[in-house]
Amino acid sequence: MKLLLDENLPKRLKADFPNHEIFTVREQGWNGIRNGELMKLLIENNFDALLTFDKNLQHQQNFTKYPVTVFVLSAFSNTYPILTKLSPKIQDYLSKEKLPLVPIIITE
Image (cartoon, rainbow, N blue to C red; front, side):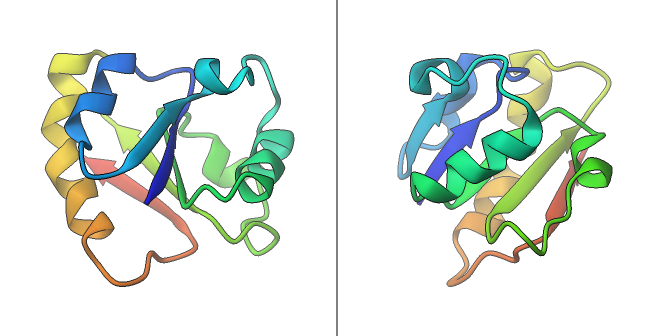
C-alpha cells in the first residue's frame, strides 16, 4: 500500500512499514498544506492511507468526500520510541484486504 506520514510524525517511522511504499509530507513537497488540500493530494496521487498525529483532523474533515484511510496515532508524545509501539496495530489493518474509509484512532 502507498502510505503518507504527516509532517507531525518522525521520519524514522517509515522503517516500521518495510512492505509498503511510504513517503513523508516533506518528501512530497507538501509541508504546510492545509488538511483539506492534503486530503485531495492524497487521492490525486493514489495514496491508500495517511498516518497523522493530528487528533483534530478527524473532526475537521468530511471523510465521505475523501476515499482514503486516516490513521490518527494517539499517544502522550509523538516521538519515535513511543509511536513505534503503535505500528503493529497499524500493520494489522494494512494486512487486511481492504482498509476502512474512516478515521482510525490508534492508541497505546
